[in-house]
Image 1: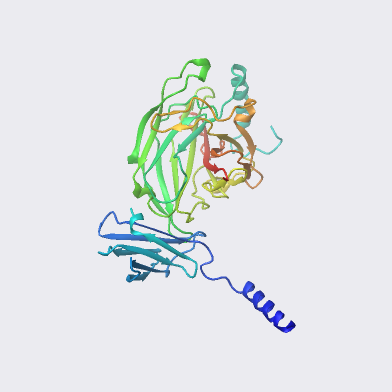
Image 2: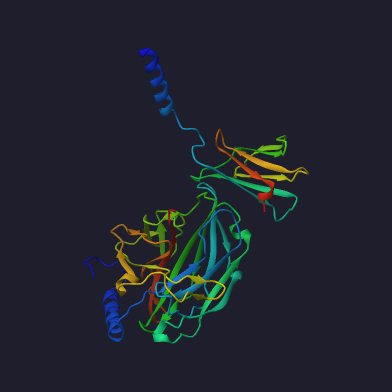
Length: 108
Length: 294
C-alpha cells in the first residue's frame, strides 16, 4: 500500500517535472479571404508567446467531419487553400487541447 | 525640480528653458503639456479590420486648446507576426488627409478657439489584416510654439495588436526620439503599471523629463472634436500633467488608475536641437490603453 502511494507520487512528480510540450502557449489562428484571389482562403497561425507555427498541422473538413484538405503551416506560419465546394471548417491542430476551429461563416 | 543631471547635450538648455518657463508663468497661471495624439478607438483588435486614425496636436487632459499641425513628414506602420518573423514596413502617407479639429466653448472662458489643422487617416483592412503587432509611427512637422519661441516635434507611436499574437512591440526602432515599451501598450488592466525606456537614436536617455496625460475628453473622430465634458475633474493643475523623471538607465514606471488612453511624453531628448534658427525640442510620445477588469 505504502509502496503504491510512493509510486503514484513519483509518477505525479515525474509528470510535473517533465519537459513542457512544444506548444505550451495558447494557439491562435486567423483565416481570411484572399483579396488577390477570391477562390482562396489564407490562414495565419501563431502562439500567444510569439512562437512560430511552422509545421503545425491544419485541416479543412466538411460538416460531416470528412477531411477535405490537409497540410501544415509553412515557414511564414501561413497555409493557403482553395475553397471547397462543400460547407467547411478549419482545424488548426497544435496538439491535445490546443486546437482552434474556424467556421466558414466567420471567414471574411 | 529634482537635483539630477540633465540629459540634454545642449549646454544652457535648462537655463533657457527655465527662463522661458518663468516668462510663460508670469503671463499665465496654467502650464499645459503639448501632446501629439495618434488615436484609434481600439489598440487590441480581435481580428483584422479597417481602422481610422486621428492626428491632433493638443492638450488632451483639458480637451484643448489645439495647435495647427503642419503636413506630417512621415506616417507608416511596421508590422510583425510572431517574435521571429521579419518586420514589414508600409508607408501610409497616401491615406493622410487634412481636417479641421473643432474646439469646445469651455476653453478660454467660454469663447471657442477657431478650428485647428489636424489629420485623419482612414486605413483599409489590408493594413491591419494580419495577426501580430502593428506599430504606427507619426513624424509630424516641427511646430513653432510662439509662447516658448521654439519648435516642438513629437515622434509618436501607437501600437495596435491583432488577435493576441505578439510581434515587435518591444523592439527599438532607432527613431531620433522613442519610448520603448517594457509592457505591451495595448494590454493593460486598470490598476496595473506601465514600464518603458526612453531612447534617442536607440540609446537610453538617463533622467529624461517626462509628462503623462490622460485623454480626458473622448475624441469624436467623425465630428472632429473632443467631448465638451471631461471624464475626470482635476483637483489642481499639477494633476493634469503628471511629471516624472526616468531613472539613470532611462527607465520609468507609471500607474494606470483609469480606463482609457494614456499619453507618455519624453521631452527634448532628440539629437537635433535647432530648426530654422530656433530651438527645437524633439520629443517622444507613446500611447497606452488601459481597460477595467470586469
